[in-house]
Amino acid sequence: MTTWLLEAYGTDSRYSDDVRFRAYTTSRKKAEAFKAIPRIQFTDSGHGIVFWAEELPPRTPRKPTRRGLTDYISEHMGGMYV
Image 1 (cartoon, helix red, strand yellow):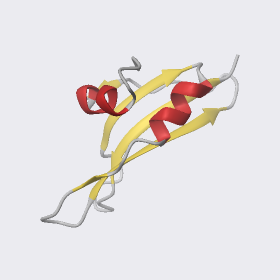
Image 2 (tube, helix red, strand yellow; image 1 turned 120 degrees about the horizontal axis):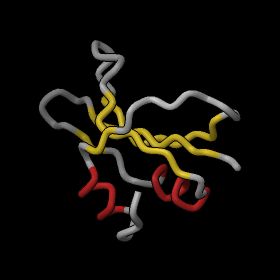
Image 3 (tube, one colour; image 1 turned 90 degrees about the horizontal axis):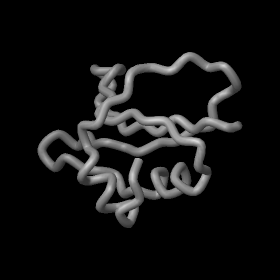
Image 4 (cartoon, rainbow, N blue to C red; image 1 turned 90 degrees about the vertical axis):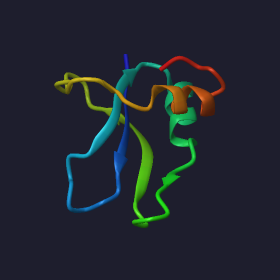
C-alpha cells in the first residue's frame, strides 16, 4: 500500500526545518488535493508556506506529525479530513 507524506513548510531558507504541518495518508486523492492548496504568502517578509505531497518508498521511517495549519488545510480541501 502506497503512503503519501503531506507537508506544509516555510520558504525562509534560514530555517530549513520549518515544518508547520505533517501528516501521512494512503489516499492519492487527498495527496493531490493537498498539493493544490494555495501558498500562504507573508507580505512583510516575502516568504510563505507551501504545501507539498510526495509518495514515500516502502518502509520509510515516519517523522512525528504536526497539525499547526489544520483549519486552513481543511478549508481548502473541501472539508476532507487529513
